[in-house]
Image (cartoon, rainbow, N blue to C red; front, side):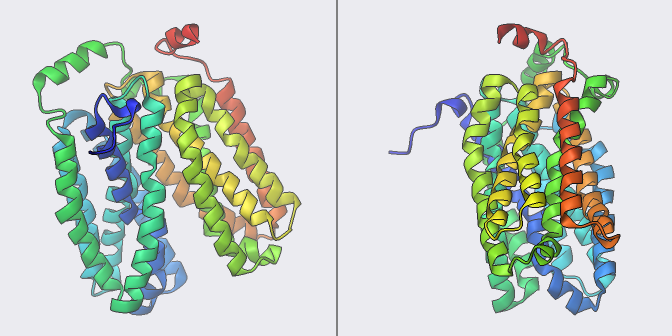
Length: 409
């Protein structure tokens, strides 16, 4: 007999696993996977570190601009069509890199991977989880977010082994094949007829007649109080992990210690996801968001004040915990606050801002390190910025849609 379906996804298990698979498939366009090709690509096309990094940053920033418009498709198209578009673009990015014969082809390849992977597939998966589940939204979003550690565990390791045995191009050919022949058919089956039935659309429109539009959200002062807290984790995590070698060098930590510490980061991220959804469902996303940032403040204070060999294990594990909590609360926040009718358009703004932040933070931290700021100073600065984001979130006003929930609690 098949295992029983968990209660919190029993209303629509197919859509819950659709969200999980979409998020996991985004891994082909995430930095943790693309980074393993850095050495091979620079050697193949005789690129400097600056040229290679600049092309990646430009592609990432461009993908954020395009996502602002394309993100609304999740509100207007049937889910099957949205999934097909996402997988086709992500596969096209894989094929572009696999067939690249000159350095200029890296730019369109990176753009397609970053837009379709980090941007569109993540956006599609999290929007699906936030829109179609209400009572257990936090748990379903946490389930979808499990796609990230799954991809982190499988893709870099498998890709690195293939690069050693059969070359870097073979990895991209295989990735395109997996996406087209396995992921796309599965997503289409899981999507069913979601969004295709006119009665579904009309019913959603009636039930969400008081939901906010993107224009209304952009006029809401509370949105700008909460957005910094939502962006804190991707901003800090990308900066710290990107410059981890420089941090380890100053602190005197060996690469073997650092490699082991990343296991703690993954474990903290994974284990916290099993609790984050329940906390969001119980206390609400807006209350949970600033609390979820506290482990990251503790982690950065620990990094600033201690240099012992055990520190990287603990501080990276705490960052993983914060990433799970803020990712779940941040994704549940927008439908809780503004409703789900225009969720794709609303999430596209925060998702695009997230992409901007992950492009900017490594440059900012690198500039500070090059200017002579030590790890202690950088860590304290980042902790202060996060604390400011927490305070803004704490004092953010509630919307009319949240007031009945507040009263119930």
